Image 1 (cartoon, one colour):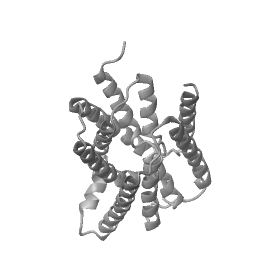
Image 2 (cartoon, rainbow, N blue to C red):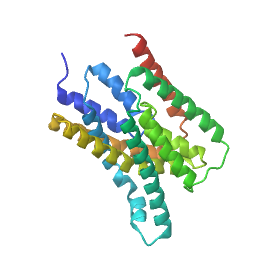
Image 3 (cartoon, rainbow, N blue to C red):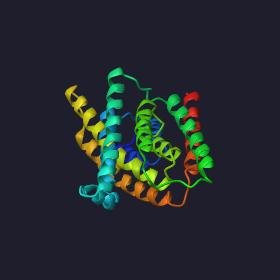
Image 4 (cartoon, rainbow, N blue to C red):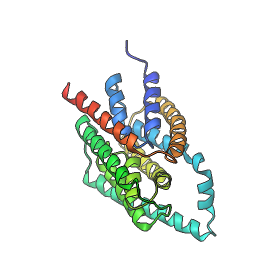
Length: 262
């Protein structure tokens, strides 16, 4: 007997919230659960619940946001400028890709490949940097690399936006905890802007949605996202991303098995 739509939406909202900011690919997880539940949600549904997940984590950065709001502080101005420049680069790159129609499909094989490759990169980078003293200073190369990582993640579903941005920042010498925070702070406006843009496009195209179910999925996604990000911010204080790398490889292998067993 198939599950009611509202239960499926709660499950998918929870999956999105748990994986949007964790470096394991929300796209890959949603694909697995869609296959398991035999249910396909619209792109608009995914976009809206992503935006809910992004908004929900803002209270976790209250101290940083207060600092950013202090426009008289030169340090705050410099930090805000870096967030703004990274955001603008991402928006320009994203709009360009959208106009050119450049994006791999959200299907099993490319997502599996991105997950496995990303997992291997996680392990290699962590091993390479394990004996190095990393900085807590966000340099301009970090900003450009993080923006590039966000654009890369938009092209290759399964890459994981948070995973790519954190690893690229660490490769520029930024320590794990600061790289994670910066990834989130630059990712939140990016997700919200992309969400608003795609929602308007969908509505102008005459999208017909069950907004009650979308609202339910958004609330669930937001609540779970808050818990997941709060946990991750503590986790990175004393753990590496090697465990996530191994998990990504295993998840990619599951997707390959699903693809070849059809």
